[in-house]
Length: 414
Ligand code: HEM
Image 1 (cartoon, helix red, strand yellow):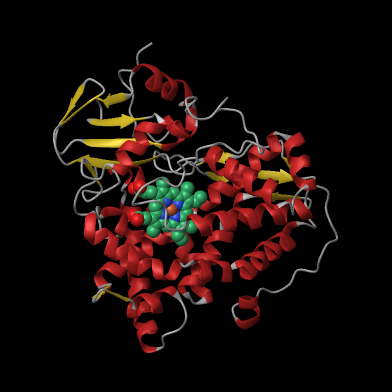
Image 2 (cartoon, rainbow, N blue to C red; image 1 turned 120 degrees about the vertical axis):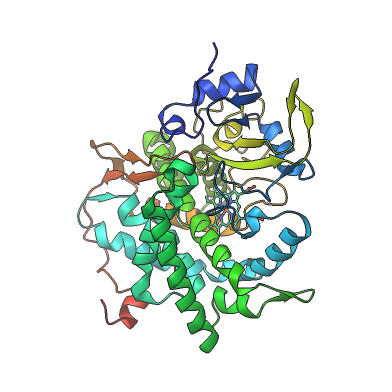
Protein backbone atom coordinates (compact mmCIF):
# COMPACT_ATOMS: atom_id res chain seq x y z
CA UNK A 1 0.00 0.00 0.00
CA UNK A 2 1.17 3.54 -0.55
CA UNK A 3 -0.28 6.88 0.42
CA UNK A 4 1.12 9.45 -1.95
CA UNK A 5 -1.56 12.09 -1.86
CA UNK A 6 -2.15 12.36 1.82
CA UNK A 7 -2.82 15.90 3.04
CA UNK A 8 -1.88 15.95 6.71
CA UNK A 9 -3.45 19.37 7.16
CA UNK A 10 -6.80 18.31 5.74
CA UNK A 11 -9.50 19.08 8.31
CA UNK A 12 -11.06 15.64 8.04
CA UNK A 13 -8.03 13.40 7.57
CA UNK A 14 -7.27 12.78 11.26
CA UNK A 15 -10.94 12.72 12.26
CA UNK A 16 -12.15 10.19 9.71
CA UNK A 17 -10.07 7.05 10.17
CA UNK A 18 -6.35 7.70 10.06
CA UNK A 19 -5.35 4.50 11.92
CA UNK A 20 -4.44 2.41 8.89
CA UNK A 21 -2.32 5.21 7.53
CA UNK A 22 -0.55 5.73 10.87
CA UNK A 23 0.17 1.95 11.07
CA UNK A 24 1.51 1.99 7.51
CA UNK A 25 3.80 4.90 8.39
CA UNK A 26 5.05 3.15 11.51
CA UNK A 27 5.87 -0.06 9.61
CA UNK A 28 6.90 1.12 6.14
CA UNK A 29 7.45 4.86 6.04
CA UNK A 30 8.56 6.10 9.48
CA UNK A 31 9.52 9.43 7.98
CA UNK A 32 6.68 10.46 5.68
CA UNK A 33 6.95 13.32 3.18
CA UNK A 34 3.63 15.11 2.75
CA UNK A 35 3.96 16.25 -0.86
CA UNK A 36 0.96 18.57 -0.70
CA UNK A 37 2.13 20.62 2.27
CA UNK A 38 5.85 19.96 1.80
CA UNK A 39 6.56 18.76 5.28
CA UNK A 40 7.76 15.63 7.09
CA UNK A 41 5.89 13.63 9.70
CA UNK A 42 6.76 10.94 12.26
CA UNK A 43 4.40 8.43 13.86
CA UNK A 44 6.48 6.04 15.97
CA UNK A 45 6.56 6.60 19.72
CA UNK A 46 10.38 6.56 19.89
CA UNK A 47 10.66 8.97 16.97
CA UNK A 48 8.34 11.48 18.65
CA UNK A 49 10.47 11.21 21.78
CA UNK A 50 13.62 11.77 19.68
CA UNK A 51 12.21 14.83 17.90
CA UNK A 52 10.90 16.32 21.16
CA UNK A 53 14.16 15.78 23.06
CA UNK A 54 16.70 16.73 20.38
CA UNK A 55 16.01 20.43 20.49
CA UNK A 56 19.44 21.02 18.93
CA UNK A 57 18.15 19.45 15.67
CA UNK A 58 14.41 20.16 15.88
CA UNK A 59 13.47 23.60 17.19
CA UNK A 60 10.18 25.20 18.25
CA UNK A 61 11.29 28.78 17.63
CA UNK A 62 9.81 28.93 14.13
CA UNK A 63 6.41 27.93 15.49
CA UNK A 64 4.60 24.74 16.45
CA UNK A 65 1.73 25.33 14.03
CA UNK A 66 2.68 24.26 10.48
CA UNK A 67 2.88 26.54 7.50
CA UNK A 68 1.59 29.69 9.10
CA UNK A 69 2.76 33.11 7.99
CA UNK A 70 4.77 35.29 10.36
CA UNK A 71 1.92 37.83 10.57
CA UNK A 72 -0.21 35.45 12.61
CA UNK A 73 2.15 32.91 14.12
CA UNK A 74 4.58 32.17 15.67
CA UNK A 75 3.91 34.48 18.56
CA UNK A 76 6.16 34.85 21.56
CA UNK A 77 4.47 32.36 23.87
CA UNK A 78 6.83 29.86 25.53
CA UNK A 79 5.66 27.05 23.25
CA UNK A 80 7.34 28.89 20.33
CA UNK A 81 10.64 29.54 22.12
CA UNK A 82 13.89 27.60 22.41
CA UNK A 83 16.81 27.40 24.81
CA UNK A 84 17.34 29.99 27.50
CA UNK A 85 14.46 32.23 26.37
CA UNK A 86 12.10 29.26 26.75
CA UNK A 87 13.47 28.20 30.14
CA UNK A 88 13.20 31.71 31.47
CA UNK A 89 9.68 32.41 30.20
CA UNK A 90 8.42 28.99 31.32
CA UNK A 91 10.00 29.60 34.74
CA UNK A 92 8.10 32.88 35.07
CA UNK A 93 4.73 31.57 33.88
CA UNK A 94 4.98 28.35 35.87
CA UNK A 95 4.96 30.30 39.12
CA UNK A 96 1.19 30.14 38.73
CA UNK A 97 1.24 26.35 38.27
CA UNK A 98 2.96 25.16 41.44
CA UNK A 99 1.62 21.88 42.87
CA UNK A 100 0.23 23.89 45.80
CA UNK A 101 -1.71 26.24 43.52
CA UNK A 102 -3.15 23.36 41.49
CA UNK A 103 -4.11 21.40 44.64
CA UNK A 104 -5.88 24.51 45.94
CA UNK A 105 -8.16 24.44 42.89
CA UNK A 106 -9.61 21.05 43.84
CA UNK A 107 -12.63 22.26 45.89
CA UNK A 108 -13.56 24.74 43.17
CA UNK A 109 -13.31 22.11 40.41
CA UNK A 110 -15.53 19.77 42.45
CA UNK A 111 -18.03 22.59 42.99
CA UNK A 112 -18.21 23.45 39.28
CA UNK A 113 -18.67 19.78 38.29
CA UNK A 114 -21.51 19.32 40.82
CA UNK A 115 -23.26 22.53 39.77
CA UNK A 116 -23.15 21.64 36.10
CA UNK A 117 -24.63 18.19 36.78
CA UNK A 118 -27.33 19.84 38.97
CA UNK A 119 -28.53 21.66 35.88
CA UNK A 120 -29.28 18.59 33.79
CA UNK A 121 -29.69 15.54 36.03
CA UNK A 122 -33.46 16.09 36.32
CA UNK A 123 -33.91 16.06 32.56
CA UNK A 124 -32.68 12.53 31.87
CA UNK A 125 -30.58 13.70 28.94
CA UNK A 126 -27.74 16.12 28.23
CA UNK A 127 -25.14 17.10 25.73
CA UNK A 128 -22.01 16.09 27.56
CA UNK A 129 -19.88 18.58 25.59
CA UNK A 130 -22.13 21.65 25.68
CA UNK A 131 -23.50 21.09 29.18
CA UNK A 132 -20.38 19.82 30.89
CA UNK A 133 -16.96 19.27 29.29
CA UNK A 134 -16.88 22.59 27.39
CA UNK A 135 -17.78 24.95 30.25
CA UNK A 136 -16.02 23.08 33.08
CA UNK A 137 -12.27 23.39 32.35
CA UNK A 138 -12.73 26.87 30.91
CA UNK A 139 -14.51 28.03 34.04
CA UNK A 140 -11.52 26.82 36.09
CA UNK A 141 -8.87 28.51 33.97
CA UNK A 142 -11.00 31.69 33.89
CA UNK A 143 -11.07 31.62 37.71
CA UNK A 144 -7.32 31.14 37.84
CA UNK A 145 -6.85 34.11 35.53
CA UNK A 146 -9.27 36.26 37.54
CA UNK A 147 -11.90 36.96 34.86
CA UNK A 148 -14.94 39.08 35.60
CA UNK A 149 -17.99 36.79 35.66
CA UNK A 150 -19.81 38.48 32.78
CA UNK A 151 -16.92 37.88 30.35
CA UNK A 152 -16.38 34.13 30.79
CA UNK A 153 -18.80 32.87 28.12
CA UNK A 154 -17.71 35.46 25.59
CA UNK A 155 -14.01 34.61 25.98
CA UNK A 156 -14.84 30.90 25.68
CA UNK A 157 -16.54 31.61 22.32
CA UNK A 158 -13.54 33.63 21.08
CA UNK A 159 -11.14 30.87 22.15
CA UNK A 160 -13.15 28.20 20.36
CA UNK A 161 -13.04 30.33 17.23
CA UNK A 162 -9.37 31.25 17.16
CA UNK A 163 -8.17 27.74 18.05
CA UNK A 164 -9.51 26.72 14.63
CA UNK A 165 -6.61 28.70 13.17
CA UNK A 166 -4.30 25.97 14.48
CA UNK A 167 -5.36 23.68 11.63
CA UNK A 168 -3.20 25.55 9.12
CA UNK A 169 -3.12 28.60 6.85
CA UNK A 170 -6.48 27.92 5.18
CA UNK A 171 -8.17 27.80 8.55
CA UNK A 172 -7.05 31.30 9.51
CA UNK A 173 -10.25 32.96 8.37
CA UNK A 174 -11.37 36.52 8.96
CA UNK A 175 -13.47 35.21 11.84
CA UNK A 176 -10.38 33.67 13.46
CA UNK A 177 -8.40 36.91 13.14
CA UNK A 178 -11.33 38.92 14.51
CA UNK A 179 -11.79 36.59 17.49
CA UNK A 180 -8.10 36.97 18.37
CA UNK A 181 -8.33 40.75 18.02
CA UNK A 182 -11.38 40.83 20.34
CA UNK A 183 -9.54 38.63 22.81
CA UNK A 184 -6.49 40.95 22.69
CA UNK A 185 -8.67 43.96 23.45
CA UNK A 186 -10.23 42.11 26.39
CA UNK A 187 -6.75 41.09 27.60
CA UNK A 188 -5.55 44.71 27.56
CA UNK A 189 -8.55 45.93 29.53
CA UNK A 190 -8.15 43.13 32.05
CA UNK A 191 -4.44 43.80 32.44
CA UNK A 192 -5.09 47.48 33.12
CA UNK A 193 -7.62 46.44 35.77
CA UNK A 194 -5.14 43.99 37.37
CA UNK A 195 -2.46 46.66 37.48
CA UNK A 196 -4.81 49.02 39.26
CA UNK A 197 -6.22 46.35 41.59
CA UNK A 198 -3.86 43.36 41.83
CA UNK A 199 -5.36 40.14 43.17
CA UNK A 200 -4.24 36.56 43.73
CA UNK A 201 -4.94 35.55 40.10
CA UNK A 202 -2.38 34.44 37.49
CA UNK A 203 -2.35 37.71 35.56
CA UNK A 204 -1.61 39.73 38.73
CA UNK A 205 1.06 37.19 39.66
CA UNK A 206 2.71 37.33 36.23
CA UNK A 207 2.78 41.14 36.30
CA UNK A 208 5.08 41.05 39.32
CA UNK A 209 6.90 37.73 38.65
CA UNK A 210 10.69 37.95 38.46
CA UNK A 211 13.30 35.28 37.72
CA UNK A 212 17.04 36.00 37.62
CA UNK A 213 16.25 39.67 37.10
CA UNK A 214 13.93 38.91 34.14
CA UNK A 215 10.24 39.81 34.01
CA UNK A 216 7.41 38.92 31.66
CA UNK A 217 7.01 41.92 29.40
CA UNK A 218 3.46 43.05 28.79
CA UNK A 219 3.60 42.37 25.05
CA UNK A 220 4.41 38.72 25.81
CA UNK A 221 1.66 38.34 28.38
CA UNK A 222 -1.11 38.33 25.78
CA UNK A 223 0.47 35.30 24.10
CA UNK A 224 0.97 33.35 27.33
CA UNK A 225 -2.60 34.25 28.26
CA UNK A 226 -4.02 32.93 24.97
CA UNK A 227 -1.78 29.82 25.10
CA UNK A 228 -3.32 28.90 28.45
CA UNK A 229 -6.80 29.24 27.00
CA UNK A 230 -5.99 27.06 23.98
CA UNK A 231 -4.10 24.57 26.13
CA UNK A 232 -6.51 24.69 28.98
CA UNK A 233 -9.93 24.45 27.38
CA UNK A 234 -10.48 22.45 24.20
CA UNK A 235 -7.90 19.78 25.12
CA UNK A 236 -9.22 19.01 28.60
CA UNK A 237 -12.75 19.16 27.19
CA UNK A 238 -11.78 16.48 24.74
CA UNK A 239 -10.08 14.27 27.36
CA UNK A 240 -13.30 14.37 29.42
CA UNK A 241 -15.89 13.87 26.69
CA UNK A 242 -13.96 11.48 24.46
CA UNK A 243 -12.80 9.59 27.57
CA UNK A 244 -16.40 9.33 28.80
CA UNK A 245 -17.51 8.24 25.34
CA UNK A 246 -14.96 5.41 25.39
CA UNK A 247 -16.23 4.38 28.83
CA UNK A 248 -19.86 4.37 27.65
CA UNK A 249 -18.87 2.29 24.64
CA UNK A 250 -17.47 -0.26 27.12
CA UNK A 251 -20.28 -0.58 29.69
CA UNK A 252 -18.50 -3.42 31.56
CA UNK A 253 -15.50 -1.14 32.16
CA UNK A 254 -17.77 1.75 33.10
CA UNK A 255 -19.57 -0.39 35.70
CA UNK A 256 -16.22 -1.71 37.03
CA UNK A 257 -14.88 1.84 37.41
CA UNK A 258 -18.12 3.22 38.89
CA UNK A 259 -17.70 0.68 41.73
CA UNK A 260 -14.13 1.85 42.31
CA UNK A 261 -14.65 5.55 41.87
CA UNK A 262 -12.79 6.34 45.12
CA UNK A 263 -10.02 3.83 44.55
CA UNK A 264 -7.02 6.05 43.83
CA UNK A 265 -5.10 3.43 41.88
CA UNK A 266 -8.03 2.36 39.69
CA UNK A 267 -9.16 5.89 38.90
CA UNK A 268 -5.61 7.13 38.17
CA UNK A 269 -4.99 4.30 35.68
CA UNK A 270 -8.39 4.91 34.04
CA UNK A 271 -7.74 8.64 33.62
CA UNK A 272 -4.33 7.95 32.04
CA UNK A 273 -5.99 5.53 29.61
CA UNK A 274 -8.68 8.09 28.73
CA UNK A 275 -5.97 10.66 28.02
CA UNK A 276 -3.95 8.16 25.93
CA UNK A 277 -7.00 7.06 23.97
CA UNK A 278 -8.56 10.49 23.40
CA UNK A 279 -5.17 12.14 22.65
CA UNK A 280 -6.51 15.71 22.34
CA UNK A 281 -3.69 17.16 20.18
CA UNK A 282 -3.19 15.73 16.69
CA UNK A 283 0.27 17.19 16.22
CA UNK A 284 2.91 19.79 16.95
CA UNK A 285 5.49 21.05 14.50
CA UNK A 286 9.25 21.41 14.76
CA UNK A 287 11.73 22.94 12.28
CA UNK A 288 15.12 21.48 11.29
CA UNK A 289 18.01 23.61 12.56
CA UNK A 290 20.49 21.73 10.33
CA UNK A 291 20.65 19.17 7.52
CA UNK A 292 20.07 15.71 9.00
CA UNK A 293 20.11 12.15 7.63
CA UNK A 294 17.41 10.02 9.23
CA UNK A 295 15.57 6.82 8.31
CA UNK A 296 17.46 6.85 4.98
CA UNK A 297 16.20 10.32 4.03
CA UNK A 298 17.86 13.68 3.79
CA UNK A 299 16.16 16.36 5.79
CA UNK A 300 17.23 19.92 5.10
CA UNK A 301 17.73 22.85 7.43
CA UNK A 302 14.45 24.77 7.58
CA UNK A 303 12.26 21.73 6.76
CA UNK A 304 9.13 21.36 8.87
CA UNK A 305 8.29 18.12 10.66
CA UNK A 306 5.06 17.09 12.38
CA UNK A 307 4.81 14.79 15.39
CA UNK A 308 1.59 12.77 15.19
CA UNK A 309 0.62 12.16 18.81
CA UNK A 310 -2.43 9.89 18.29
CA UNK A 311 -0.27 7.57 16.16
CA UNK A 312 2.46 7.38 18.83
CA UNK A 313 -0.17 6.65 21.50
CA UNK A 314 -1.30 3.64 19.46
CA UNK A 315 2.20 2.40 18.55
CA UNK A 316 2.13 -1.38 19.03
CA UNK A 317 5.88 -1.29 19.82
CA UNK A 318 4.94 0.35 23.13
CA UNK A 319 1.27 -0.40 23.86
CA UNK A 320 -0.04 -3.97 23.53
CA UNK A 321 -3.27 -4.09 21.49
CA UNK A 322 -3.07 -0.31 21.19
CA UNK A 323 -6.57 0.24 19.78
CA UNK A 324 -8.20 -1.51 22.73
CA UNK A 325 -9.57 0.85 25.37
CA UNK A 326 -8.64 -0.64 28.74
CA UNK A 327 -9.04 1.27 31.99
CA UNK A 328 -6.77 -1.25 33.73
CA UNK A 329 -3.96 -0.82 31.21
CA UNK A 330 -1.21 0.77 33.37
CA UNK A 331 1.52 0.79 30.68
CA UNK A 332 5.28 0.87 31.41
CA UNK A 333 5.72 4.04 29.39
CA UNK A 334 3.45 7.08 29.60
CA UNK A 335 1.30 8.16 26.68
CA UNK A 336 2.63 11.14 24.72
CA UNK A 337 -0.62 13.12 24.92
CA UNK A 338 1.15 15.82 26.96
CA UNK A 339 4.32 15.72 24.85
CA UNK A 340 7.74 15.05 26.36
CA UNK A 341 10.98 16.94 27.02
CA UNK A 342 11.43 20.66 27.62
CA UNK A 343 8.00 21.62 26.27
CA UNK A 344 6.16 18.95 28.28
CA UNK A 345 2.69 20.34 28.96
CA UNK A 346 2.77 22.91 31.74
CA UNK A 347 -0.88 22.25 32.53
CA UNK A 348 -0.68 18.44 32.70
CA UNK A 349 -1.39 18.27 36.48
CA UNK A 350 -4.34 20.62 36.11
CA UNK A 351 -5.69 18.69 33.10
CA UNK A 352 -5.38 15.39 35.00
CA UNK A 353 -7.08 16.86 38.07
CA UNK A 354 -9.92 18.37 35.99
CA UNK A 355 -10.45 15.09 34.15
CA UNK A 356 -10.33 12.94 37.29
CA UNK A 357 -12.78 15.11 39.25
CA UNK A 358 -15.11 15.36 36.24
CA UNK A 359 -15.18 11.60 35.67
CA UNK A 360 -15.62 10.90 39.39
CA UNK A 361 -18.54 13.34 39.65
CA UNK A 362 -20.26 11.86 36.57
CA UNK A 363 -19.77 8.26 37.68
CA UNK A 364 -21.00 8.96 41.21
CA UNK A 365 -24.11 10.82 40.20
CA UNK A 366 -25.02 9.29 36.82
CA UNK A 367 -23.51 5.79 36.69
CA UNK A 368 -26.26 4.70 34.27
CA UNK A 369 -25.31 7.34 31.69
CA UNK A 370 -25.39 5.98 28.12
CA UNK A 371 -24.76 7.32 24.66
CA UNK A 372 -28.01 8.58 23.11
CA UNK A 373 -29.18 7.23 19.73
CA UNK A 374 -28.27 10.53 18.13
CA UNK A 375 -24.51 10.35 17.49
CA UNK A 376 -21.98 12.89 18.75
CA UNK A 377 -20.33 15.33 16.36
CA UNK A 378 -16.57 15.50 15.90
CA UNK A 379 -14.92 18.89 15.37
CA UNK A 380 -13.26 19.30 11.96
CA UNK A 381 -9.62 19.99 12.68
CA UNK A 382 -6.11 18.85 11.87
CA UNK A 383 -4.90 20.27 15.20
CA UNK A 384 -7.17 19.00 17.97
CA UNK A 385 -9.20 15.82 18.31
CA UNK A 386 -12.38 17.07 19.81
CA UNK A 387 -16.18 16.98 19.74
CA UNK A 388 -18.78 19.69 19.34
CA UNK A 389 -21.53 17.56 20.85
CA UNK A 390 -22.09 14.25 22.63
CA UNK A 391 -25.75 13.48 23.46
CA UNK A 392 -26.23 11.16 26.46
CA UNK A 393 -29.23 9.73 28.33
CA UNK A 394 -29.81 8.46 31.89
CA UNK A 395 -32.66 7.97 34.37
CA UNK A 396 -33.80 11.44 35.47
CA UNK A 397 -32.90 12.18 39.11
CA UNK A 398 -34.79 14.40 41.50
CA UNK A 399 -31.34 15.11 42.83
CA UNK A 400 -29.94 18.14 44.51
CA UNK A 401 -31.66 21.48 44.11
CA UNK A 402 -29.57 23.45 41.62
CA UNK A 403 -27.28 25.67 43.68
CA UNK A 404 -26.12 29.07 42.47
CA UNK A 405 -22.38 28.96 41.88
CA UNK A 406 -20.29 31.13 44.13
CA UNK A 407 -19.96 33.48 41.15
CA UNK A 408 -23.65 33.48 40.29
CA UNK A 409 -24.44 34.31 43.91
CA UNK A 410 -22.15 37.35 43.58
CA UNK A 411 -23.13 38.35 40.08
CA UNK A 412 -26.16 40.53 39.29
CA UNK A 413 -26.28 39.12 35.73
CA UNK A 414 -27.76 35.81 37.01
C1 HEM B 1 -5.71 17.01 28.28
C2 HEM B 1 -5.31 18.26 28.19
C3 HEM B 1 -4.03 18.72 27.57
C4 HEM B 1 -3.26 18.15 26.59
C5 HEM B 1 -3.52 16.85 25.85
C6 HEM B 1 -2.13 19.02 26.37
C7 HEM B 1 -1.10 18.74 25.46
C8 HEM B 1 0.07 19.48 25.35
C9 HEM B 1 1.19 19.13 24.51
C10 HEM B 1 1.27 17.93 23.59
C11 HEM B 1 2.16 20.08 24.71
C12 HEM B 1 3.58 20.05 24.11
C13 HEM B 1 3.79 21.01 22.99
C14 HEM B 1 5.12 20.83 22.29
O1 HEM B 1 5.93 19.97 22.62
O2 HEM B 1 5.35 21.59 21.32
C15 HEM B 1 1.63 21.05 25.63
C16 HEM B 1 2.28 22.19 26.05
C17 HEM B 1 1.68 23.15 26.84
N1 HEM B 1 0.47 23.08 27.49
FE1 HEM B 1 -0.83 21.54 27.42
N2 HEM B 1 -2.23 20.10 27.19
C18 HEM B 1 -3.37 19.95 27.96
C19 HEM B 1 -3.83 20.81 28.93
C20 HEM B 1 -3.22 21.99 29.27
C21 HEM B 1 -3.70 22.89 30.28
C22 HEM B 1 -4.89 22.64 31.20
C23 HEM B 1 -2.86 23.98 30.26
C24 HEM B 1 -2.89 25.21 31.10
C25 HEM B 1 -3.93 25.75 31.61
C26 HEM B 1 -1.86 23.73 29.26
C27 HEM B 1 -0.83 24.58 28.96
C28 HEM B 1 0.26 24.24 28.18
C29 HEM B 1 1.41 25.12 27.99
C30 HEM B 1 1.60 26.51 28.60
C31 HEM B 1 2.30 24.43 27.14
C32 HEM B 1 3.65 24.93 26.61
C33 HEM B 1 4.77 24.37 27.44
C34 HEM B 1 6.15 24.75 26.91
O3 HEM B 1 6.26 25.14 25.75
O4 HEM B 1 7.10 24.68 27.70
N3 HEM B 1 -2.11 22.52 28.67
N4 HEM B 1 0.36 20.66 26.02
